[in-house]
Length: 494
Image (tube, rainbow, N blue to C red):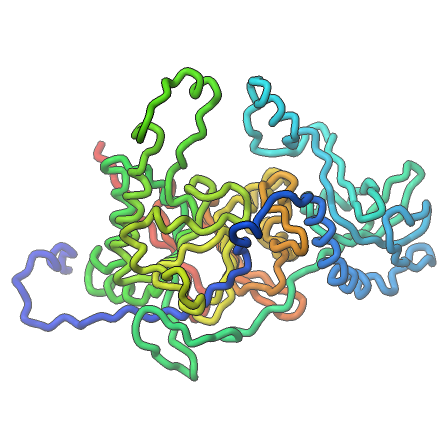
């Protein structure tokens, strides 16, 4: 048996090594979550408009699903009837209504927390869950007319959060509560065909035609790089770069790396942004004139810029902001400012050019939506799922991702417990077209599944773990949507 180390301990060969060329990537981003610029973006409107427009846009799909399911539904000879308004429900009448779910939870944060901070009172620590162990949580259903409390043994089996639009079937009891026997959600919307929005925008090399469409490679997905700028802190990230550039191992690994056509970074590339100082710190700190180097540490962004610039001559990158990145806190987070990336800026879109050419380095929004190799891809930095996690008892992130797609909402808990821009004319978080791939970054562990819709929709769900904690890189085959994991690890000498 040949020793595996013999591949390194041998005389130089005279054979010519093949000249590998990276597989091209077809890339067409959508501007779904881009906000208005300049004076057109303001925060004077009320957040209530988001709930009104959300209900107006999703009410019809929910009614269609409910009407098909409960058309001939009967209990004790009584046929279920549709009631247009919540306050029109009558006691003892079998009916179904459509509205917005509101979770009344005593442990959910409220405006009093902000008031306590304003009065210099110590704020309570953040909670991992909003659910009450003693059963004090209440589920409400509301529309333009009013609100009614939902009860029944059927409800604990359902995953519900504030903001989702549902139809409920049941009767009003003597206490004025609606006893639910069944519940319906909008379910997955229509799914576009692959290459349905193909604009022949191919990045990464020659356009290899196969049946009239470009040949696809693999998309590398990573999140939670957590760069903090310390020396020696990015050894695992350096191994990741060497792997993506084909410099980490032998010829077989180099061929596999050449098949990677794009890198998607799903948020939290920096360990933490510069914290906002407290009032005590501001009062105690002496005022300085000119530049204060202690007020801002540029090392993390500089290190990230150098790392990405090392990849960009060979590999196109889509970069999403996350919770710890230097971007706006409210969703949708806008692209990271190009001034943060002086080395990468040469590969990005020049301001004023046509948006059909996204550039080799695309700083995107969070959430983000686009077409990659013909597939519709929806991705986020993880805040949306992390907030849904606080409303429910379970720990299954894939189940939460599936529920969000079936609710047709990428951020259902915004603006209740998740900061967001106050949309007025439409709710941008509504999923109008079903994606083929749904990616959520910065999750506790890797997980994946394929779900199906009522009209044959198939969606690949991918929960991407934090690279800093797990060292895991996800590879998504853009031909069959298969998933594999590449793990990087450092062995500590004992």
